Image (cartoon, rainbow over all chains, first blue to last red; front, side):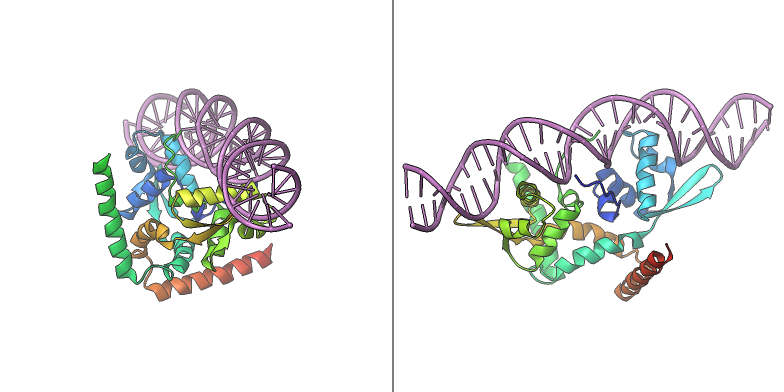
Length: 117
Length: 117
DNA sequence: GAGTTAAATAACCTACAAGTCATATAGTGT
DNA sequence: ACACTATATGACTTGTAGGTTATTTAACTC
């Protein structure tokens, strides 16, 4: 068992809710309440805990305004992740254009697959 | 509790051992045994399970040679991750050079921090 | 065919992530 | 001071990831 926890960016983005929060914040800063409101299936404390993880991993910044906490994305926090994945980019079929073609092909392939079943 | 498991690339790379396996395979294809040998702290079945996750998430390919399984990295499997993080790249302070400067600064900052304690 | 080698699978254990409800903290307004 | 609002924290529960040992599967060697 790994007991060395080291919460890092890889861990932070492994959760779909946290990715959704980041995606939301990419559209602009929001209060914790406004964020929580976008996740009706989760409770306020649930979102609060996700925000804590994002804080701890330096993926968001918080500013205080009265009782509110305004969360802002810190895209630099993703630098480590970008750095890591970029290493593999060199191994991609070809250039970025090839990657885009690949992604498009995969997208339509998925559609076709969905139709089949 | 999330019970929709959907093992995806984000989950796959959240584990440090699996990232290390990918990093290893980036240097060339290897048999399961050769991979396991690089992780003396883990047992063979332990590595085998990690390899299963990488297989299931399409991050590696396997070819059979006698009793051996030769694992090859499939960097295209990281496309989704790259796609996701690239969205945030636009929000980065400036250009790629700025990112690199940032990473360098962070690296030396970490060294300084380590010295302090 | 018996023994050996390589890898996967099964059964099991334990720590912890992700969720809940209840409560605490802290700022606002009257 | 008191009620209200916004968010964080504590205590607790549960599912599962990540590890183990033992076993199975399958191919090769003699």
